[in-house]
Image 1 (cartoon, rainbow, N blue to C red):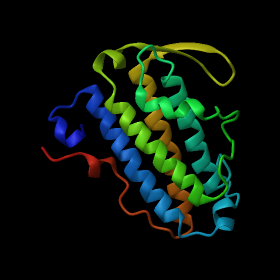
Image 2 (cartoon, helix red, strand yellow):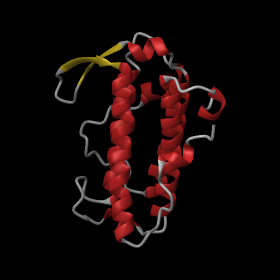
Image 3 (cartoon, rainbow, N blue to C red):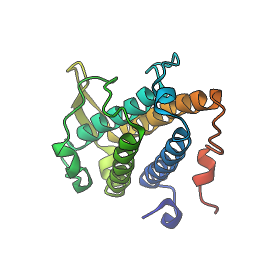
Image 4 (cartoon, one colour):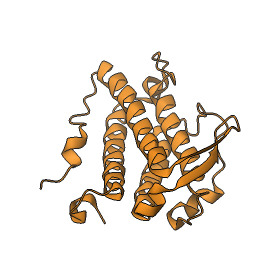
Length: 185
């Protein structure tokens, strides 16, 4: 199901919209970044995760960490089965891939996983709690839907940083607004 075919705006359809937007924006970001050489991508630009490649890695790292947490929910999400063999990143600034092409390949795969995952959600699951531990081992129990909001907001936040870094290098991303992905009534 896509947001355009759902016909109503349920919590699940909101998350499908966010997953579609996430996939579209990542494709745009990686396409724009591919116009730069590896030195430009790795150059420390004073961003929180230093460089464009560092920030893109951070988004991937955080996504893997959260998806692995989501996979611990009592409901089994077959869409997340592929993550079982992936090691959990140790640090939020882990550099999983130094080459953009390899990072992009993993990003595309993960974005498809995310879209498949949100399609497996139900309103009951979204209303339930997820028990998880943060990176420091502190236990939490929070509303699953709110955690998904954080998951997508986190991606948007850091893509905005990459967008700024690209803009400073005169690389134009074009339209980035979520509005583009919202279907007409």
